[in-house]
Figure 1 (tube, rainbow, N blue to C red):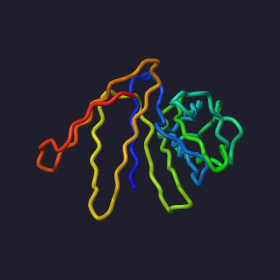
Figure 2 (figure 1 turned 90 degrees about the vertical axis):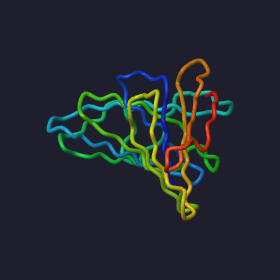
Figure 3 (figure 1 turned 90 degrees about the horizontal axis):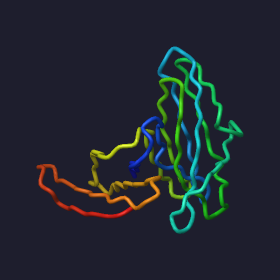
Figure 4 (figure 1 turned 60 degrees about the vertical axis):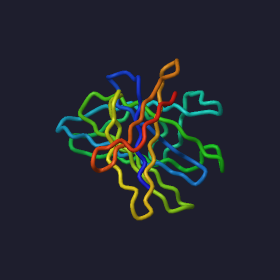
Length: 176
């Protein structure tokens, strides 16, 4: 399973972790890599989705740290943060995160479902109004795309799916 997400309408100065899952059989590993030779400070703020699609502040439990508001990453180093898999018990919790950094830091989220032996990963990125995502659904594979917004109003999203030869096989319009 390949999971790829995009967020629309976000601040341009934050990297966005588009999806985080913890509990209900899911765990997430954040991989934060400082690509510079200089040390970097990192702050990660999380938002949890609640019933009805409302977002609220979230403090997912991590094995390595209690707080993610002042992380120091040495130059050229990688930091791994693993959620405990205990949020909301069997129901689990999902949300997204914002990464603010003083340096050149790249972030990936890797989701693992231990019950179904599934894994997916997404890179953190700056908010975008357009996303190109190659996919391969052959051989029983499934591609999933999650879209989210932190805008206070509904956002219209157009999705176009093209075949290998460039012809449009499906076009849809939806609201977030």
